[in-house]
Amino acid sequence: MAKLAPFFPKSNGKPRVDDRRVLSGIIFINRNGLRWRDAPEAYGPHKTLYSRWKRWSEKGIFARMMAGLAAEHGEQKTVMIDATYLKAPRTATGMAAKKGGVPDQAEFEDQKTIRGIVFLRTGGMNTKLHAICDSNGRPFNLFVTAGPVSDDIGARALLGPLPKVGWLLGDRGYDADWFRDALKDKGIRAVRGRFDPLDQILSPVTPGRKQRKTPVKYDRRRYKRRNRIETMFGRLKDWRRVATRYDRCPKVFLSAIALAAVVIYCL
Image 1 (spheres, helix red, strand yellow):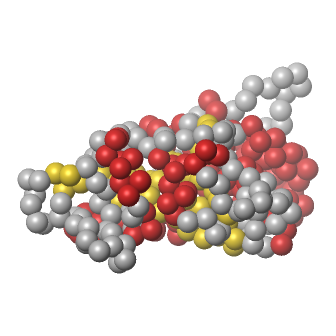
Image 2 (cartoon, one colour; image 1 turned 180 degrees about the vertical axis):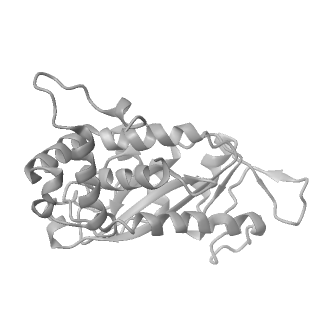
C-alpha cells in the first residue's frame, strides 16, 4: 500500500471506504474472473467495489500505477515488443468500432496518453494486446486494439514513448521499412549477428519477412531472449479477466491489464 498510495486520488468531502479492503476486492475479482455481485462479503458491498473500479479506471489511476512503478526500473539496454490475442465474448462487443476497423497514423496522435499508456476505442469479437517490456520481461507500455489490426500498426502507438535503449527485440511481424527507419532516428542499435561484431547498424534485432528478396541479418543469439515477453503474456493471462475480456470499454479493460502487471511485477 505504501507503493500504491501516492497514485490514489485525493478524497473530496466524505472520506472514502478503506482503500486496502476495496483494492483487495478489486484484485480478487480481476484475478478470478468473477462477476462483481459474486464478490465475497469480506470485501464489502459489491456496488462499492464496482463503482470504485469504474471511476478509477476512467481517470486512468491504474494506468498511472503501472507506468509510474515501471519507470523505476530504468531500463537502458534492451526492450522487447510483441502482441497477443485475447478472447472477447458477446458481453464485450457492445461498443462499435469506427467504420473501417483499422486506425491510421494520424489517429494515434490524437489519442489520450498517460505516461505511455494509450487508449483507443475498439470493438469486435477479438482484442489484441500490444506491449513493450524490459529485458527482464516486466511490461511498461501497453496498447489495446481490435483483433484484426496488424502488429506494425500497433507498433506505431508504442513507438512514441519508446525509451532510448540499445536494442529492440521483435519477431517478423515488425519487419517494416518505416519501423526500421523510425528506430534509426531514435538511435537504437543492434550488432549484425555473428557476421561482423564490430559493424554496428541502426536496426532492431528483428528477423526479416520471408518475402524479402534480400535477407535481413540479425543477432540470433540476442533474439533468443525474446521468450521473456511471451512469458509475460502468459503470466498476465493467468488473471481470468485479462485472458477473457468482459469489459466493453477499452479503457476499463486496459486498467485490468495494468492492475495485473502492477501486482505481478511491481509489488
